[in-house]
Image (cartoon, rainbow, N blue to C red; front, top):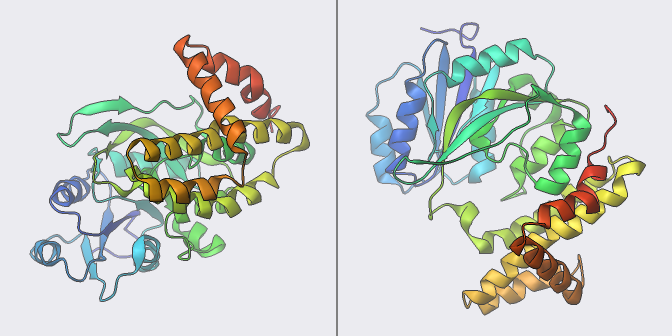
Length: 330
């Protein structure tokens, strides 16, 4: 039997009505090579008989299953599993995605080489519903990202790792900084990454370790979900802005207007195009606090026109990007 000392890494798998993709995903985790590990699954759907039956018939010494009697929500489920984990390193996971066989081994190696980081994430391949690779995520060629660069990137691009399945963290980080904020339904991960990186750098594993699945049923692809995510992100963005140096703040705020808020307006227009007037009205009420409607239209139209001539990136680089991310080694 494995002891606490021999388990190097614990994989945390929240599950909610994930069949049938969940089977493929969990198989990829249980078949990891070259490292001692455990897998903790939290079944957060008490009425999901199919998932319960599947999990209960599995015979694997590395697997522990928790059937929640009441729905805990994503972040409550994660917190519960993390508190039960025995590994020094926590690898978060998602029920749709696929781990490459050496993922956990490479993750442990990286954390051993970089013991003082807030968290780490890797290069990823994006796959469709048929497991075909449709995209590879670009990353910088550095092994670490400074706390300041993480703050600036979070403000302009949102969640730096992009997905919880791409994140590994030493357990003591949770014990030191606290766990996911369960009052946030959609942005609990984003808030946590930002909370733990105020003074700590982030690790970047320069290998493709996981395959993230993109499909139409995902909550993150639901425009209505973004209404609530924007509202939750508001306080997080305000906290991050307080960390931005004086030399960068003007350009970061400009980037928020031209990139982040412009994306919000694009989502609003998409709701109008699809005929969901009720959701569009709600969306507009939420985003009007950031800018006037004429200003939204001006920025959105400007970038659309520049995009036709492939000049939008050049324009944005000169407008804010270069100066916003000028950290001068900080």
